Image (cartoon, rainbow, N blue to C red; front, side, top):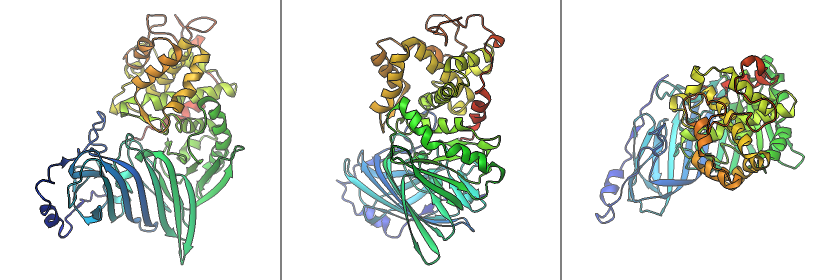
Length: 508
């Protein structure tokens, strides 16, 4: 693999820039990062994107990707320069119809100098033309483009967009999407939202439209040979599933799991409220990875998730993210508990539904599984650090924290919170502190000490201690005080739940 520079100056752009009157050239550059403490260079400042129009042509045999992305945005300040996140080779950039100067800087910055200063509050139309082989382009020694025997896949967290379209790559700048991809006949395309297709001699164009706000990392693209299936839930929600035609021994287990998507999204709606998007589904490409990702409305699953047989638990996990993570997204990546703690807890709810272990039994089991000096308890789910953002403790200790919350406020208030939160914050962003304020408002109880103990303390909470509400505290039967692993037997669902622990461990 190689790292390609993105450096070019379009003819005449400098002269146009110099022609701007001095009185107009009083703006400044937009920041090269959006300010996230975990990923300081992710995203960009100075503007807000409303829509991406992505038109691509891809040749699977050679991994050649040619594209034109049009970005609609609004200036948040006066701008003499701004950045996009992108790593492919750029041919031309236009800003508001005029040729712009551009250069590649840092690991993934496309720095753009428009011909005229952009004033605060004004609309911006950016057109970026590019062509490259994304599977050969590295950033930090890695590529987020997954090359497959018959094409390629973009699905990664916290970033993958830069390998197929330029963007403001941070969850706080959501937008709507149109994705149109031209591929040779016999090749299929998977992306987010509703779809149409058309043909011309030897080529097929696939068009996808996502009309609900979508974070950039939740946009996905898969190109290859797929068996695509379309159906609806009993309520009429379109369900689109797709499977690589070369999944081998994992094909049956993958289909037996992902084909239950319609059933499972209806079941989760009973806990979380109405499903927030216009389509739902999942796809399983032929990739040599082990993870899954909650790409919006069209979930990515690697074949390895089904290497030990069918697993509806991983489907539940990724579907739960459609509410907790996709519709309501993190404000900062340190707020990851709002995504993963609740997605893991949804697996516990499914376990209880299937009579394979209650949420309480799973919480007790996790609590007893790790002694106080185990490193598991040193990771704080509420602020795990970038290096531990997808550690097992964020999921399992995070889910125990959800159970502790449930026990503290009682089932009636807890399930109101569980459904009300993604309803009130629909299509937005939030922090853990926002969630705490909401849960306190609904429950009428102060929850700061409890959440601080379970989410922000690098130690095993002592059962019964002030603020350390034990998972079993509000339940009938023996409390956890003095419990050991042999009095908290392994729930039957545990092994299947643990098989999903690779869902996010790949992240860059």
